Length: 244
Image 1 (cartoon, rainbow, N blue to C red):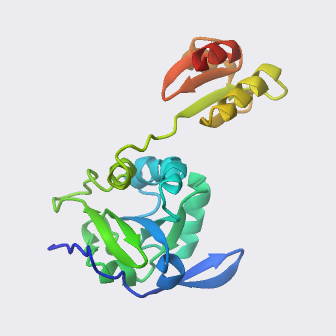
Image 2 (spheres, rainbow, N blue to C red):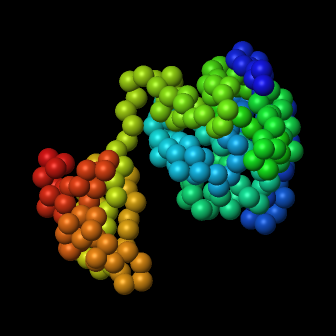
């Protein structure tokens, strides 16, 4: 494939056709990169397994840390149309990463990253990579090794963050099981917010995750039940003790 490393070079000048609030909006390379520090990660396709389970979610999760360390915007690039990218953003609840459709592959081709994935029925798509761009110039690229399949070893969010600032600390993330109207749940969420711990909230009800699910996951039937970085903390009082 002879993939190119474009460090020290300008990014391609391309106009992206996007849809915003049901209207066509043209976005060009200068709009994204000129006078700004931007992290870009590019991947083979929206809704594909690695892209949806790991690549995009982790960049979205670490976005506040990137912003604290001088990054103005995080861009996810894929050779997909704007309708697919917008729907994927909604599906992923990706509120901190900007998804850009490189529908014709012009930007990807200009980066030397356009590859043939006809064996998967994809046609021409992007090789997986990430890069740090300052004022339109590529400072650093992490390009996945040229091996068969879809390697995912170096273009991840943690590798990029470590390059930008090896001392940067990723924010902790939590999952909290709650019920509507539960005062102890409100207390637990306030504790997490006060300690700058981002969380996803899972409502326990008969129409979704049930009490039986909660018992299976947390070995408890009461809410809230809090997990931080996969560790089961317990209820609001347990969380208060844990946070000291």
